[in-house]
Image 1 (cartoon, one colour):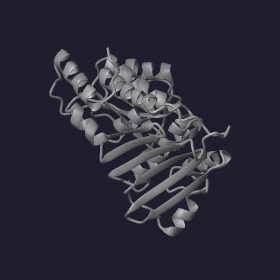
Image 2 (cartoon, chains in turn red, yellow):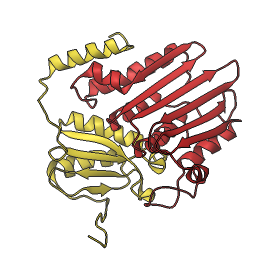
Image 3 (cartoon, rainbow over the protein chains, first blue to last red):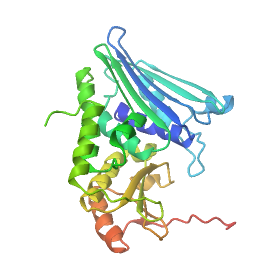
Image 4 (spheres, one colour):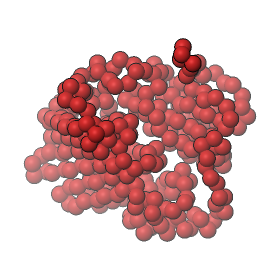
Length: 182
Length: 131
């Protein structure tokens, strides 16, 4: 995957398949410690200890359409290539938390990517439950979630062009304000 | 126009849009609208399915077609990503492979609007031996 946004799109699909009703995507950039952490937490069906261990194996998947599951292993590879790490914690019936760290200054750290578009498509594609996106840097923080979006937009469809562009612009403008490089 | 920065801006935008168009009270029942599901698994994302999904949203909106665009997981056709499953009201779902920008347009013009079968359909059998 070429950007962190693409990894987020991928991992959140796992949370959706686990029937989570609350999914949180939290990005924290700290220049002082030279680290960028990505945390994706959900309250879905979770994994038992055995599955948790196998989750980072590219040849393991819970699907029956294919024999490989690349989402988590690819993210682990990218994180470790950038001098970082990947941590996974999960409890059956309670949920899963994935935490990936990347060294901010590392040449192999993937760029953040198109967060506006990615989050828009996720808000559009997961109407059930609550999806939260939070981004914190040394210059400030920004957060948006699907419930406040629904509240502001009422009955109008997210697919309407003006609304689509509005949501993407809202995210991009706020990320610019807190100095997020993409 | 000032940049959209807060939820209040979005709310104002929604009011403006509502006042310009008469929003039909559309129940959006799953079996009465066109359903478009874009495969958004690892293979899909790596092949550009995000763009495909966006093109669908934009084009369907432009052609004023009542449709719900959403994502789905791996459908098993990783060699043909990006894949899209289109379900016309009352019909069986049809899966298309290698759906780039041109294909999106073709699917909308010919399959969705006119029901014409086009190239690039992946034969899918949802029924198992036990059915």
